[in-house]
Amino acid sequence: MADRSCMLTKRKEKEAAEATKNAKEAKSEAEKAVDDGEAPSAEAAAVNGAVASGQNGEVQVEPMELPPFEIISGDRIDPFVYKFQFKNVEYSSGRNKTFLCYLVDKGNTPDGLLRGYLEDEHSGTHAEEAFFTQCLPHIDPALKYTITWYVSSSPCSACAAKIAEELKAKKNIKLSIFAARLFEWEEEEIQIGLKALHAAGCKLRAMKPLDFSYTWDTFVESDDQPLNLWEDCKENYEYYHEKLSDILQ
Ligand SMILES: [Zn+2]
Image 1 (cartoon, protein in one colour):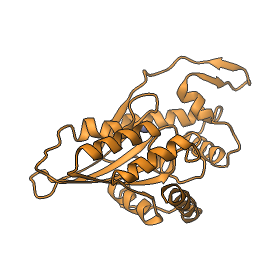
Image 2 (cartoon, helix red, strand yellow):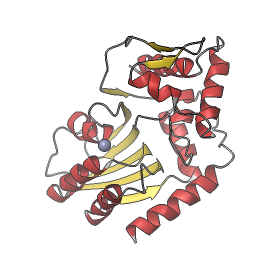
Image 3 (cartoon, helix red, strand yellow):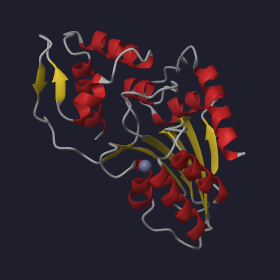
């Protein structure tokens, strides 16, 4: 499953770079372009369907190569995919997915600890909702669940509302969400969703530099290579931390 996602992501980024034959070069260029906010998201266009500029500058309509998929789950994330998807840039253009790494502690039970990740396409079921249907379909009222999510971006308003309902209905679940980026935090309905989560007892925080190192070690096929944090990781964390504090105050 992870291989498929990796392959897909690489394909998309290759498309995003339009004409570059060298896939590695294409990857870094696409990332740089979207990070710098210089280019409209060619990747998003490629992902969503289907209109992309050809080498000769003409707009071409390309058929979808693969049917849209909804949720991918797995054990460890491809390192390149992690570095792109979790990078805490201020604007997330091109990153139209959510990656959700989870740890579940069910206490002193034979299967007491769960670890893994989910990824979605925003066109389908979101990873947050899929977590409850796929990873924890049965909540045992006799157990206490301590759940930690590391997400590439914070929940949309619909997911926030659903999670808040889940937490209110099931008092034996404690959820902490650590987000690399805040998703559309300027939007009022997003802020309402985050406040509802907070009010329902969910711990919400922006991912600190240490959280990126921790998730790298825990959820990525890192081959024991340490994560080299990107230059502005700490500044970006502080930016999101401040925005989140303002929203939740
Ligand atoms: Zn959502």
